[in-house]
Image (cartoon, rainbow, N blue to C red; front, side, top):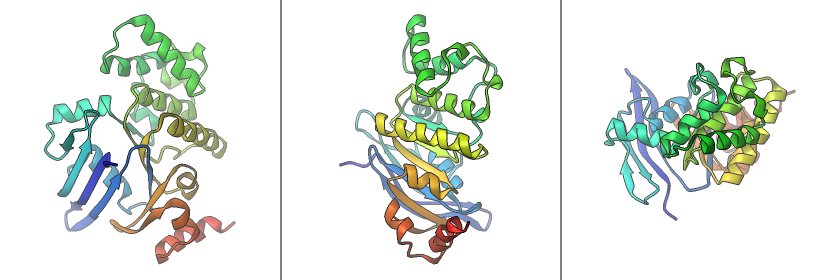
Length: 256
């Protein structure tokens, strides 16, 4: 099977500090890759470099698009990259306010993405927006409300609907449960797990929370000081960690 995304020797520097040091991995269709590490480990820099939100200094990024064409993301013109992010990729921000248009209604947030992928019939757009609100457990009656009137958990669910309505082939998630209450996190995680499996999503998930990757990720990379120190199947890495840093992370979550 051909990888959906190939990352080869990706490096990013901030002055003399190497935030990402020759990161290499393949992501396959319908696979969820978790990337875990403490703050400053380089995981968010890596994710933003892949998304094109940060320029990378070295390495190659190759993506296989819907037409089965291999695209060199480093040389892709900016208009085409923006188009890719609207039609084939989604980015779930830690703060959902950064991923939503706060001055338009919930329905319009979803409808705009349907316009991006070619839908033009208002009635069909509104009907699909209602379906997606139901899918992410937001009452249909809130379709004409502004996201600013929603709770944090509901805003995150709306951001998921805004992204998933276009049936993306790759979803990048940056601490999607960060800042939410434990009960809200649990509900959101259950929803995310269901959507990932039902829609056969390919996902790169960045988090500091081992519980999140254990629930969602098929494979896991552990980052420390810009380097991948351990990788493998999620259960294998977490149940039998080999690197001292991974052992430290796992043991920290086991302390009551």
